[in-house]
Length: 195
Image (cartoon, rainbow, N blue to C red):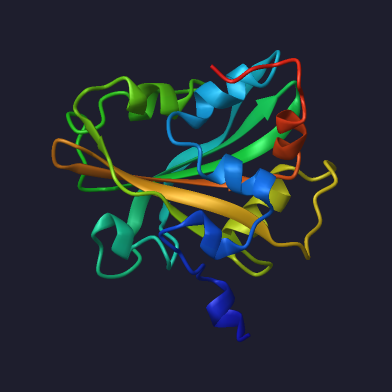
């Protein structure tokens, strides 16, 4: 595989297409709020904001948010932690054309969950989930490894991700979630039930 092709993931319409384990597929296909499910599977949930600033969107994000080529976007990156362990890396991009009326709380989220905002706003329309394997060489994996250094992630491993475009008024917002191995340990906690 050529280095340039590693910068793009192959996004598929069904989680079976990424050939993940049954346990990982279950997490990928979470139908409602992932945040709510993570909270239900842990004693302590935390959103750790890593960065929020403008940046050039990734090569495989531009078309999804209506851009003809990679351009500057608003970008937010977080780690979702359950009981101290990083379980999901969240990456959100919003085109610069979006206004504060489109996404009124985006700039002020801090360490609050974006998911709680999206799922409880009746004006937000959720698109279809897409699924991919994120391989070494993809820019998101580089960011994941930098964010969780020292937490035992392997740089040569493949990770699973999902993404979804949300629309509010005229604004688009793309959320990509990269699932880390520790998320599977949550599913094994038999004393906690998903609500």
